Image (cartoon, rainbow, N blue to C red; front, side, top):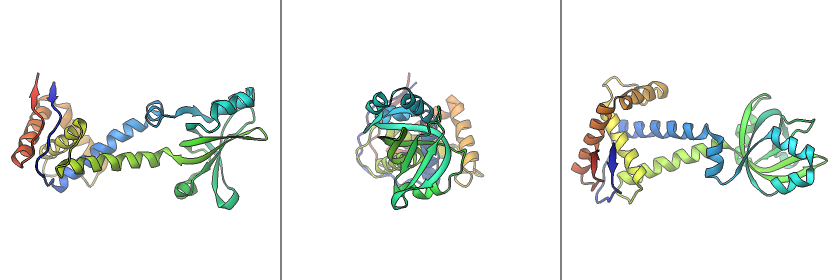
Length: 240
């Protein structure tokens, strides 16, 4: 079992382009896995995960109770697009498939308007919104952003953390492991690797390296030694 203590940095390591590319591929894969589980995303952003169908059912049953549940609250809203419309001041909004002839509406912030313009009826979406009550029985949500935008933000934050680690800034335990993994796996790639030109094939090659536990541990040890040799005071690394 991999054992690392919190890192203490004292120098700078300049990663190769391949190491940075591997770090980026690993980060994207982790975030994709995270975003595929709405309940985890909702917990992280401190929101309630709800489907458009559930919202419609709640408002059909009791509008007063539904307003108390959703109004002003942050929600992770999932649903199927039935219409893409332009409202006041050209603000885009989506109509989502509901139930009982009730179709929730989600107003999209301008910063996400370009992606809204690419949507088609039948697309599935997941939005981060705030409840805005109802008008004539239609549930409304405001200030909605696409969850994919949040994913991109998380990816950037993860990569910034790895870059900061390499530059010698104090970093978390998990960031130190991620950085070492990128260095180690990059070293294990074949000379004709598909990293970073082909994301899917690159990811497949990295997963193959990680699947061989003995090889993976050897690569991690080598990465730690390499980082130490370049002046980084790195966490103790051992197996138990």
